[in-house]
Length: 278
Image 1: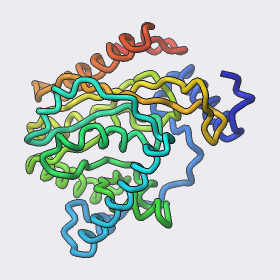
Image 2: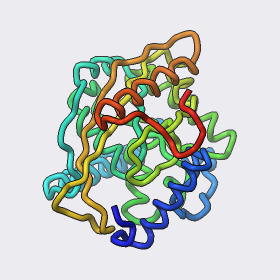
Image 3: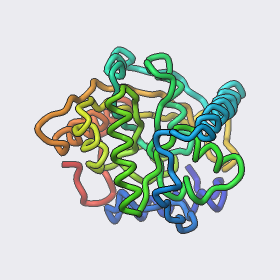
Image 4: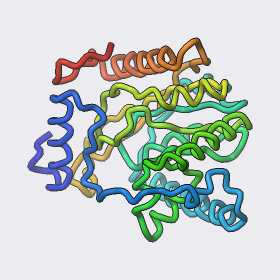
């Protein structure tokens, strides 16, 4: 891929990814987002207890679903298929779902492929603080009301977050987390995981269902950034049940994603840094 064909903004993002991988900073923030406004405890109705938030959730999910289904219909968001659907029976009593994070749309790819297996109609998504507090307009409305669970630098807010996640999981909901933390645009390799989401699963006594999205370049079309349109396949791996440590669950989930990456792309997982995946 010749970087000169890609928009300057995306060129810069790819260069930052290259530099971060070389330095072994796999959780580096790549997008030039403004500093996040702090999310205070009274600003997040995690369990949607207020009636106005219930109405907003219904509206936001309807708008969001229509928007993304239209992208799929127009072949802008391309989903070629899904493998491992037999593992989705683990969602029957609630689960933490993990996914690689490379696009603002990857959460919908997961939801679209698993929605018929969700006993409850919603998929909750853990999102970064700035996505919840910084955005205005339609995107801000969707970020705040499409079953999102925002993180926060505020300790009290995070206590509320942890309690709400535990409640949701124990009542049978499924929650999507990004254990890689930051979004790296169109990055295909799995990155080392953070343990936080696995601690949440262990605490609630629910399984982790690792998923991994692979991509191929559409040979005939470029997107609005001058980059080949990406064609996506969602791979669902066997569930990982709570064990003696969240760290072990994390290692098993990463190993499953690493193996899937090597199987699909036909190359060993290596990085341009001396960092290892062990």
